[in-house]
Every structure is written in structure tokens, then in C-alpha cells.
Length: 360
Image (tube, rainbow, N blue to C red):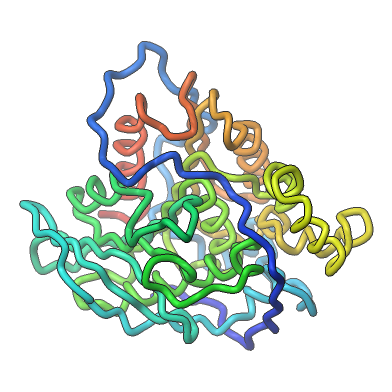
């Protein structure tokens, strides 16, 4: 297992505030692949090959990236999450949903620092050990969300490609324990659940603990970035689809302020508005800490995405590069947020990337 920074847990604060994030655009079905478009994707800085393992601590320092912990804060922040004692464990099978020709799909729970989190586990047929991927889904209203919803296509494809897949529901969803409203709004609780999902997976006898990755979509892209900066070295690679912004303020302005002004006002009254409390908002933005990321990151975005602007991924890609992160951005002309026409091309690229980076 790669080292994960573990120290004291930062203090938790609660605030009544609705969730703001992108919708997945995926109702949970696995649609038939659509015909390919004649125009191809735009690939930004796609390498012909990349490192099969994340840099060591010495290599990380020699790249000019500090990786050091920023100062602790007295308010909810990524620096406090960096100090968390992650203890993902206790993965239990609740029931088997389906057995296919390639894998078994089961409903499961695991423990995330005392919180019980539900999800679905897909195990390829055979003994293993297999590489593994944790899936971080996009926004779906928790009141209507059902376990395993949101990344059905990815679950099936990755399991058939020989990966153990754990799709975490996050706290406050499906059969998981309740979540605080602030945990949902900031996504810090979701990032904690994603990190602990990796640790829980690594304890399974049929999982190779040295070959793990994350994949996040829309809001789950932001969750993935939060996890990468909070726990560098946890996984070997990450894939992000149509992500929210790596700036917390971008997301606040895109959804919370126009759609829930009362919630935004309550947020400002408690922590100050962005002009009065810039450090608070920087502390919730993963881009502030991109120099901590040690994993290669593959990003996808459609140029016609009207939910999460493609400019957000371009900026994130540039800032990752500036921080010394090995990153690739693939843009699909005319593709919308839900990724239908070119999804198959993207998942083929994803599997090739994961096999290369995980050396499988």
C-alpha cells in the first residue's frame, strides 16, 4: 500500500445548506453506444507513454512540488481533511444483485471514519488479485438517489476489463449514514468517503493494493480532485469526466447563489463573503493545493457542455500542468455533459490509460 498521510482529524463544523453541483445527466441506464462522429477529439498534451507508478517522495520534491501540509484551519477546509486519520475498512456484502458472464455485482457497505457508507461492488470472475477503481458519481438529488446510481456504463465496462469496481454512494445517499449539510455543500465528506473506499478495497484478498485508481464524473470530478490533494499517493491514477470547477467559488456562483440565494447568504454570514474571507474559499478549492498531487490525471470534456463549462477543465488542466502534475485533457467537439455519442471512445481511452499507469 502506498503511504497516506494520517494525523489528527480537523474539527468538523455544520451548517444547514443545500448541495450545489453538476447533475450527472445519467439516469443509471447503460445506453446503446451511438455511432461515432466524424470529427475527432482534441487532445491536449497527451503523452505517448507515462510513468507506471506515482513519483516517490524524493522525486516529488525534486519536481519543485512541496507536498507539504498547509497550516491547519479552524473552519472546514481541505487542509483539515489532509490531517484526517483515514481508516476505510469493514467492507461487507449486503446482497448479490446480479451475476453476469464477466463479473458479480453486489450491494455493500464500508466504514468511513465511523460513518457507514453504502455502494455497489463489481468483482470480475476469477481469483485475482485484480486492479481496482473507485467511482465517484455526479450530483443526483439524495432524496431520489438509489444505490449504485449514476455511473452504470463505467461500472460494467471497467468490470469487464478486469477491474474490481467500488461505486461509493457517499454519506447521505441510499443506505449510507446521514450527512451534514455542510459536508454535502463543500464535498469534504464525500472526499473522505472516496479516500476510505480505496482503503477498504485494498483490504480485500482479491484486490492488488498497489494498483488502484479513481474515476469521477461532474461533481465526482471535484470529489476526486479533493481526494488527490488530501491523500497524495493513495492511488496510482485518476480519470475525470466533465468536471465541476477546481475553484469552490466558481461552483458557488454557478449554482448556489442564483438558485438558492438564502443558502448562499447564510454561508456568507457564517464564513464571510469571498471578498472578506478569501482564505476560507481558497481552502475549499483543490486548485490551491495542486502541487500535492502525485498521480497522473486524464480529463475528458465536451465542448458543448452547458452544465459544467469546458473552460473549467481547460483551466484545471493548465493549473495542474503548472503544478508539475502529469495531466492530459481530451475535448470532444459537440459533446454535451452526459457524454453519449463519444462515450465509448472515452472509456476505451480510460481503460488504456489505467492499464498503462497501473502496469496491468
